[in-house]
Image (tube, rainbow, N blue to C red; front, side, top):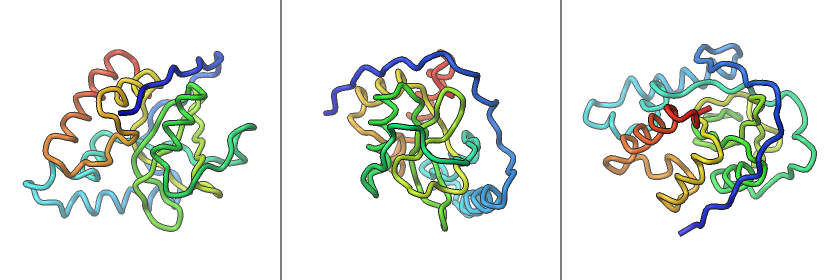
Length: 180
């Protein structure tokens, strides 16, 4: 099991923008269409285990990076986004976000969110064109890691009760201010 690390506190910064569910770009429109199309075709029996249905109800857009990564953030190993984002979030004190991102095609993906609301994607270079998901504060990430031993919030979403457990976790963390 992964032992949680203490996150470095982030310096005070400008507040993050409010959560946004409406698409502003072509990439965001395509990503929302993809998720909505899958969610519409899911049977009621499968819906409790559908990540796409969950995200359509709980997710939000994060503005895609417009420039270079912040100084000191390297490109991390490909195809390991959940570990990459969790490791970076823990080391920088940033939020951990997971959902779907678009870079050519929609992909289940994880990234970081700075206190200003900026997406930092240490796995993809160049970064994606659209990001839609949920984000949690470093303390909530540490609690998730301690509880599950997994970096990804949704890595086994198809198992019975996993999405319900994540929803309950997010609701509790939101009440405590840990959901971004």
